[in-house]
Amino acid sequence: MEKIYDVVGMGELLIDFTMNGKSDQNNNLFEACPGGAISNVLSMLSKLKRKTAFIGKVGNDQFGRLLSDTLTEVGIDKTGLVVDDNVNTTLAFVHTFENGDRDFSFYRNPGADMMLTEDEVNYDLIRKSKVFHLGTLSMTSEPVLSATKKALKVAKESGCMITFDPNLRPPLWKSLDDAKAAMEYVFPYCDLLKISDNEVQFISGKEDYDEGIQYLIDKYHIPLIFLTMGKDGSRAYYNGKRVEKPGFKVNAIETTGAGDTFCGCAIHEVLNHGLKNLNEKILGNILTYANAAAALITLKKGAIRSMPTPNDILNLIKGEKEKDDDLVK
Image 1 (cartoon, rainbow, N blue to C red):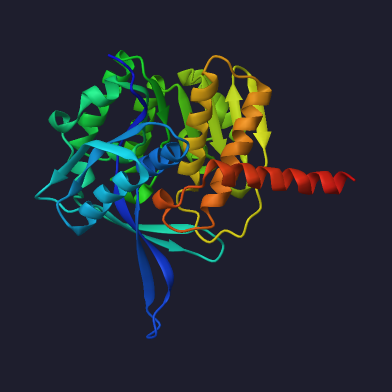
Image 2: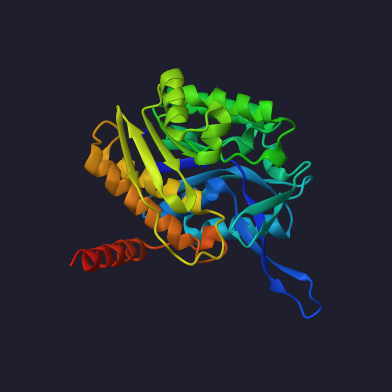
């Protein structure tokens, strides 16, 4: 089947209610931001002129309609979006602390994204894509767990490059053992893994990031792994090489979606170069580009609608290079 899509993603599509100041009565105000890790990644890819499509489910309610309209707005094909008349759209409330840490409260028991069945998945979208992207939020419970496993097998059989960001959210799991099992199910399929510092510690049981990554490489033979470390930057592990680049210093107001933005840029660049044609220089450039994009998204709220443009990303990189050049003089 002809590969007419660059990336097809399957997973959650939800509303992130992010804190937005106080009312006159000193009550917290929340802004309803369309989101979900998979759709954020696809939105960044669409900004980079990639052809993308989403597979998932929303409720037949005002939030589901907002999300459907948002996919259209940001250029993501919604052929694979299913609408459920019986279950409401998933909601997440995000509380951001002064130090930048976040606390999530989910209204998802059940939420529409959990109720996607095997029979409702548009597998031809996957067969027509160069890349299939997923996370673990579509593996927290049935029926979407079985649907995700079948989609993963179809992707492998269709020759897709499989990209995976676990996006661990402990409140959504009945037990963290289940979360670990879901991650371990996907790893053997995985061609490109984007994983955060706390996730690699969780899955490997090792405090040292390099040791944790080596555990994954030895056990699952994942060709390319990107490790994100928040404001401290990121690393790439590929064919025995380890490359690290620092993060960009910005006055962040909201970090939701930063990892997804990084992931979208990384997938885009790997599509440009090919998974088998990477070297240390290319890996370094990928990290710098993705770090810059991730920094920029933290300056705005509502990741899916706020993805940086290629010019924004290049300008930040250029500005940082000019600062470094001035320091050398």
